[in-house]
Amino acid sequence: MQEAATRFRLEESISDLDQLRDDLADWTVSAKRLGPQGQYLDQLSLLAEIAGAGIDQVRHDLLDRAAVAAGGELYEECRRADHRTALLRRFWRWYADRLDQRLEDGYRPTLAAADEIVRSTWQALYPDDETRPPTPLPHVAPIDMAVSTARDEVPRDLRAPSEPVLARWTKLMPLSTIALPSTVTRRPWWLVVIAHECGHQVAAEAVEDRDGSPSAALEAAAARAGAGDDEQRDWRNWAIELFADATAAVTKGTAPTWSVMELERGTPGTLLRPDVGYPPPVLRWCVADAVVARIGLTGVVPDADRELLAASPFAGHAARAEAIATALLDIRFGGTTLREIGVRSRDWERTACRWRDALLGVTEPAAGTAPESARLCVAGGTMAWRRTTAGASGNTDRERLRRRLLRVLPQSRPKSVRHATPRPERRAVAVTRQVLDDLRSDAW
Ligand SMILES: [Zn+2]
Picture (cartoon, rainbow, N blue to C red):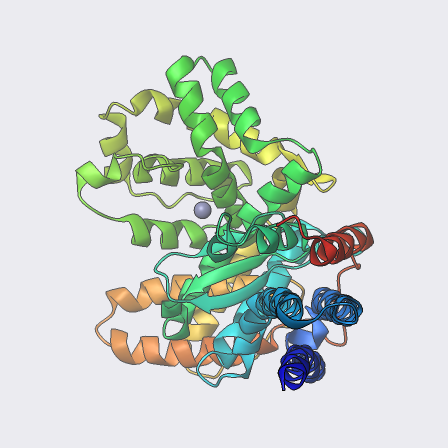
């Protein structure tokens, strides 16, 4: 009787592992169809491989240990295996849930649009197919502001101490994500925030590659421009957000600044108050304007806001906005700089304006086929949305704009190009080894 119970217990643990293997196999088949032309396939097939190897490892260890265990010992072995099975499932599903949102009707058009904007932006930032880091995976989340999780960053809900092992695995996974607020499903012009979030991803990649760090570059630029210690420290603390804004500006022109101004607009007190990691909003906008001016575009910050800043305790900072903008454009990453990308993209502001007019026009706009189409279409969408806020027929116009963006953006990509990125072999080996080591270990 006792023996039958322990055998049954072992069968349960093995069947959970087999179920996980079946679920993973089904998912691998469906995942191949998701994302534009298999954009995320390389990273996600790596996920399936790691989880598959992990299942084999846990199954093998359990059968090995069960062969010499009896009674309570065998129960403990089964519990050990069950915990590992659950961890593997949670690791896999953390990424899979985000990709699989593309199967849901409520998210499908928005994420098809987001996929193209990310691809288009990422290719502008890393033009070389051979060295481009894996494309970040966008998904929708119940949040009010977009959040990036870089490749070597542990997702917030998997951070230690709750799950130190999962934290280690996700930190090594060569897959980054961009969480978008759910409002984008109803107001797709807000997909323009992807530009800023891609900037966060670039900043993380630059640190990993030991390229220039935005924090050090801005602190040094502020010192050269005559800032005192406190102000140098401010620029250092704000560097990542300002670099993300500059990335947005060189890939999409002035549209991201409009969207940031709309998001941050408030009383004069709010506009002059810094936040953790962020400059006072009006100073942030003026730096973004200085960036676009340096790539030959006209800034968009209203005079009244500039005057507010000039009369504030941040006037000294404002006087150094141009030096800061110059430093941002010269930070090296991936063999290039934002300045080089920005100079190439100078004419794209005009293209974004043409998208604005087409999206508001009488005839239905056709999708673009250039690499930059998706990111300039969403920039034009932001400009179009601004126009609708001034007109009397705003609601009707915005509804048409929403419909058009969700139709055109998902189709806006070059024909017959598979958007793969090179498989990050070094990372693949490192994460697989860590997962298998941790599954074997009893040290946690
Ligand atoms: Zn940010």
